[in-house]
Amino acid sequence: MKKFVMFFIVAVEAVLSYVIWQKSPEYIRLGGPLLVLGLLAFFLTLTITIERAIVLWRAGGRSDSGLFVRNVMVSIKDNKLDDAADSCRRQGGCLANVVGAGLFQYQIMKDAVNNRRDLLTETRHAMSEANELELPLLERNLPALSTIASIATLLGLLGTTIGMIRSFRAMSNAGAPDASQLALGISEALVNTALGLITAVIATVMYNFYTTRVDKFGATMNQTSHAVMLLLRKNKEG
Image 1 (cartoon, rainbow, N blue to C red):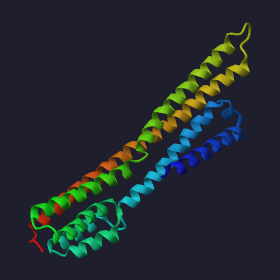
Image 2 (cartoon, one colour):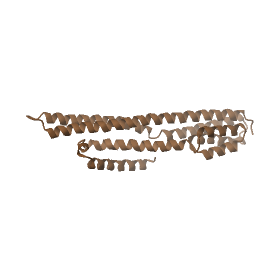
Image 3 (cartoon, rainbow, N blue to C red):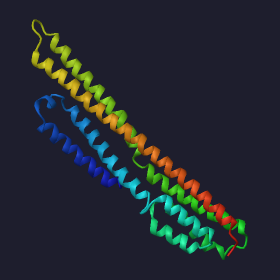
Image 4 (spheres, helix red, strand yellow):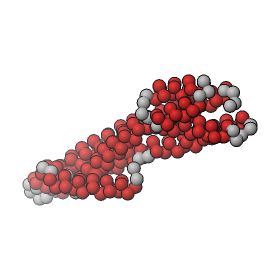
């Protein structure tokens, strides 16, 4: 997601958070203006969660990755590199891009390099570079989820603290406590705490889930690249 698009989304969600706070029932509005930041953190968590789901779904390619790997391996084993490269182009996604980069480099350098060891080295470098380009795309915005989880918790704690200050101030009045101010403080504490904890839980769970998915993508790309190199090494030159 490009930066200017993300800035636009943050601005829209900030306005939406303010509108929701203004239109909410009174017991939610009593959470105070800090609730706007809590709602913004919540909406950002949902936005990043959906965006990462789409990116990782596309990264898997157009068909089953296991079937794709088997087909490519069979083509390489039979020395049908054109068929293997064509399978990569049709599949798309991170794994196909990495394998395709290696096969493309192998085919280009095959007639230009006399030393087979140099040919395999160039092929390995091509797949390694493609891998290094793909992983940052998969990891993008994941640190933001982790940051939001921490910030949401702190916002909930801040709202709780401010609400308790308001409540104790109402109780400190001479005579009977100011019931309205006491209720306002309690509402501010509880609403902000609830929203902060909900946001933090969602952000933490999704961060761990997506991090695990990215690690699996990385492991699969490394294993497949290694298997491709072994098959290319076994094949006769030409």
